[in-house]
Image 1 (cartoon, rainbow, N blue to C red):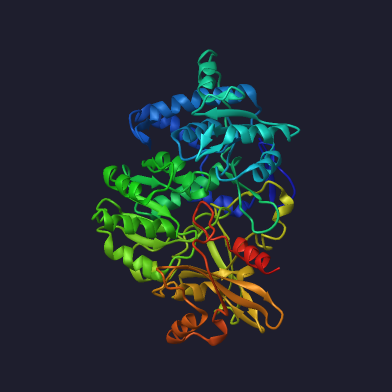
Image 2: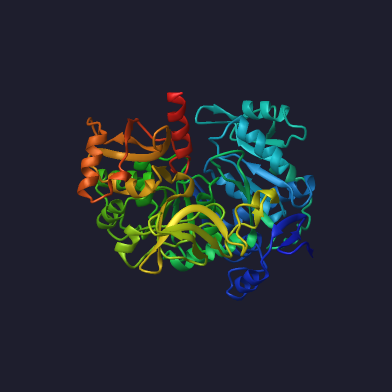
Length: 545
């Protein structure tokens, strides 16, 4: 049931979401939005192609029939325990069980809430309370961390604690995952709810640079539109295989693992932990055709492929995004891989895959962040002071339907309903977007605007630099100064004068030169490989206070 609320919003399955009637009409007309959910697609696959393998996790191969049966049993348990629209969280690695849990929540009309396994008590406690989680699935242990102990501490601090289910362990304090299926088979199967495709089906929290993270809400249809876009632009054919190394708790990993196998006829090959040598082995042995990940994934995969003396002949597409991507890296990988198109893309949790890359032109694939796909992108407040660019704003059928708390939306949507990304960009050759930095990353030195990404993209080609992040630090004389944090390539440790000499040769204005250099062994990143500049800045400021 739907009921109209105030202008621009709608109540669906008990949640208030943003609603744009014109956008909805267009999305339905183009087939990007539909009236069924992934649960319907899974049921159809189980009936018509029951033996087609959807998920590969080491020796485990989940076919359509098995995945449907397991998800249906788990969905029955959820429906008996909780009301429709309840939040089901899972804090798990890239294991095949996550697909069962995700599909079960979808079938039961629940909301899936993936949580990064790298998070700890502070963030976990906040999220579980914020979404009013009813059940959470965790590993007993993973990467030498005791999740059962952590959840025992967390639930004691919550007024309404969720039920805790433990996978791949024997923790007696909580519910054993396997026992849920034993309970389900002892009960007669009941009809599951008919789910509105515009209802919220997933909540994923952003990592926010300040304050608490925000819960991004996606509907069945916003994700369906996203997958249709991928199918159209990413050279996907039935029988293709996606290597899923990105965490399934990020938007990228989740769609490759859960959505693409059913909606695009593909198979997801899961990696529990990232290891470049193992990735190359899987790319070869499983004949994977698609791989998407941040810059470190591409750098390390390319190096490992060279060591293994393979040009990855089955790989059709490598999609690189989530962090600064040097154009030289795209050219290098494109030259080395036997068949694969390598391209940069741009998106966010709120508006995933805003640009779809470039698959027919290596120059634009390397030097830009690609063409827009189904999102309408504008450059807002373009200014000559920032590389002839401005803030990137976007609107499309794959965008979020709101935040968990509507008040968080006030500053992130403009009057026309465009999402304000906070990123600065400009157009190249009319139809190719280039991201030049974050609005909050702009360094203002003596009144001059410096976009760090522009300088980083040049300095990454310095022979003594493996990684670099430039941040602004408070300076009593100039307002801010540019500090370059460098991970060196070898024993040489670049100095300020070395960077200046390199940039002079590139014809860069002197006011953009870094004034300070700090050498680190590694840059802090999130699990998607994105450099955490706010953390770098905080560490540097604390070290001088």
